[in-house]
Amino acid sequence: MEEKKKDKIIIYILIGVLVILLLIIGYFFLIKKTPTKDSNIPSSTTTTTIKEEESSTTTTTKKVNDPKTIELKLDGKRCISALGEYYLTHDTYVIDGFKFSGEDYTFKYIDKDTREYYLNDKLLFKAESNEAVLSKVCNYEDYLLITMGWEGYPTTSVYDINGKSLLTFTGDFNYKNGLLFINEYDYNEGEDFYTMTNYSVNLAKDDFTKHQTSIDKINCDEAGYVC
Image 1 (cartoon, rainbow, N blue to C red):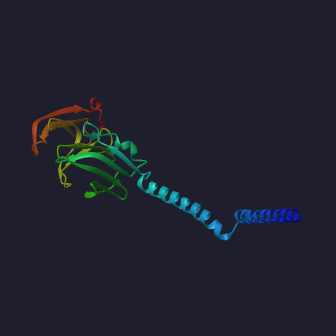
Image 2: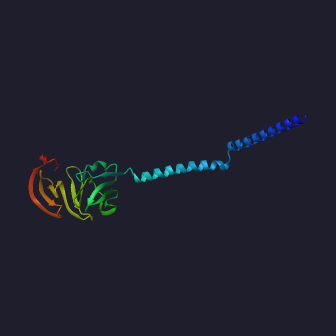
Image 3: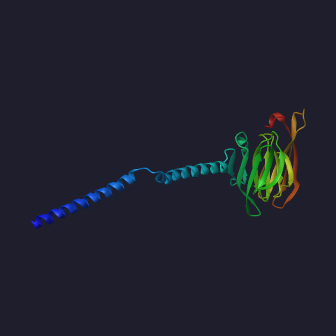
């Protein structure tokens, strides 16, 4: 009899322990499943933070990569041409690859209410905007060459690193071994010809004296220029 009573007591104890375990498991299960105000805060905060970071990054990217700004680089010939194709879509040109006295420089051109020209964010000079379009930029020796105007009517100015204009001409040019060879044309309204003056200046020696000068008279229908 006593052994049966002991067995029953043990069974009751085991049943009691099992019930308690089930209650504990059920309690924790309900706590985990039941949403609370505090339990939602981390999730909501994380989501908001991610969205804010994405928004901030996008804004920063738009500021850096302004759709009105184009970034370019000088080619091996130390010139970059055909810039006129961007004038309808861009008002700021940033061009890398310039060198003055062996140091790297970035050229920046801004055409809004006025035209502004920079080297490494230093303003070289400012000019009034007009119909002429920036078409070509070159870097020979320690000089900056800026060409404005449409094909056939280009005007080029040669500047030093401080933005001082040393030479301006209308026409074409090419560069070789320190020498800038210039074909400068001049036209008087009403005439059917223009004069072409051919000369060179020595950029390598900082010499802007005109050498090898010759003058040709060319009929307009032979020119490629519109008289």
